[in-house]
Image (cartoon, rainbow, N blue to C red; front, side, top):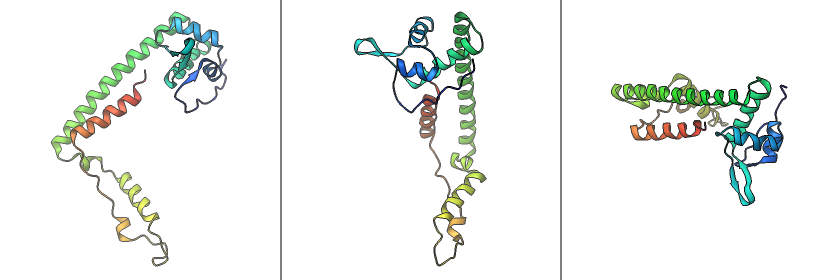
Length: 174
């Protein structure tokens, strides 16, 4: 039953009919899955109308894959989703601890900005600046200023912590 599902559009909310089409299941199946999978909780508005968010559409697709493609039972799929959620949290905690340790090492070494600067970044910056400097006087040759990579400003610990928290918030939809 491996059918190709359509891409999920960039919308904030989806109706039950839209989710049914995007996931290849009927609306009554989605309503049943809401009872069986506690992780699946669409927002309800006027007249008990359901609105699913992007992460819930992904969860419905994951449930569909477990049940229809991998042959799990409802309880087996429920257990598998819980295992994945626990593994995701544990992995995120380990990653957070490793990131914190690496950040502390960088701060002790001196400048975080120097550690963030890489040869690939230097090449990208040089290429981006040289493309914008071509004019009739230099016949397509890059100017000396364009060949000099820009240095990144050193970042403070609170700024880095804020950036990491924003990234974590984006990634932790499970």
